[in-house]
Image 1: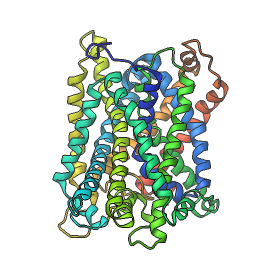
Image 2: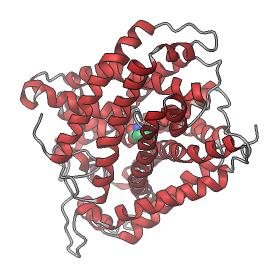
Image 3: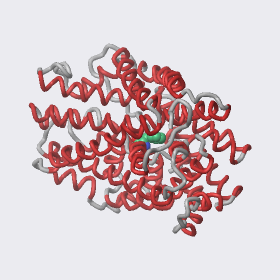
Image 4: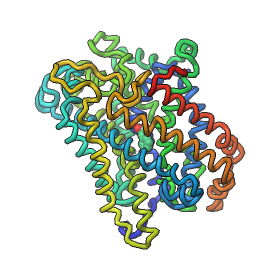
Length: 491
Ligand code: PHE
């Protein structure tokens, strides 16, 4: 199919899966999951998380994929066609795409900066991080607006180029290589991490079942953390999976795909934990300064930098530092292209419905530039740390929605995150489940799943999950987010 004149379609089911798993696996898995699991009861948290994936994640995933494939349209078109009154719900998803990608790309730019930093350190000591310690470097980097804008621009540029290539010629082509490569790189880091002296401390931190956490932290709080994490990690609630589903052929098995994506996403999250936590534990138990489990959001850019530069140190440290940050960068890119696609699909659909040229290239460039502009304020406010000339700047506690209590408008990143992840996404998902489960009835999903002659096996289970558990589960996410952002103290 000619990309310039049509919406496009996945070349194969495998290609679709790589793209969808690529969307799901991102900073959420590598950055958020390991420390959240460790800090919320380890194996005990995992059980709660898996329950969330099973009863809320799977059902929502299948709902989104089926809706997209049914209408063959992006998120706005899908809601418009199915239920006009809810057209605005599609807009929530579309706007979330701009906001999330706006800050996601800035963070993606950070990962690129760190990968290059370690690469340069291999060749010349001090060339990558200017001889600074990890905390000092991070503090100086986040207030360097020019550098932030530059890396944000590179990251967005790459995202735009891939999305410009179209569904099979761009997104699928890239993710089909990137996802297996990501897995290989992750396995290499895991082997190094697990064979370090003292690695078991980290394994225990992450995996040892600590059911006491339920009473110490509060079960509702653990549940809220698991629900929010699951939701973001599976790219749900904003139409990403609706959009990706819209490029699927009617002969593919939606039910199986909706099962594989969450399983793969969870495996990647656990693997990321095995790559990260044993290394942190090893150097913590060896007494290396500045390395502890307690860094929370500081894990990715401060603790791990210290792990590679001081803990491992030397050539090996730089090499593994490079491989690790490069893999995080790739994981971020495969997520960012799905976010941009949510935004571009709307304009492409509009052209296709008018019968004019789809004009994907031009649309992608313009949409991408708007997203770039949305991200610029995030680059310039030093993540709320105060753009000052001081040498040591505290790492903002409020970052990427990962701290315990967030103050609403502390920085642009948090502001975008609050609107999108905090309100639009959970609201969108609740309304989707109300629309399908209670207004249009779940038969429309069943008939779509069975469109290609494949019987829907788990209909009874899915139906109950979708009508009852999903809205309650997500209402919980919504309350949890509002609680976090506004410090309401509900949980
Ligand atoms: N799932 C991605 C992650 O874990 C983030 C994402 C959210 C991507 C929503 C697309 C849509 O990092």
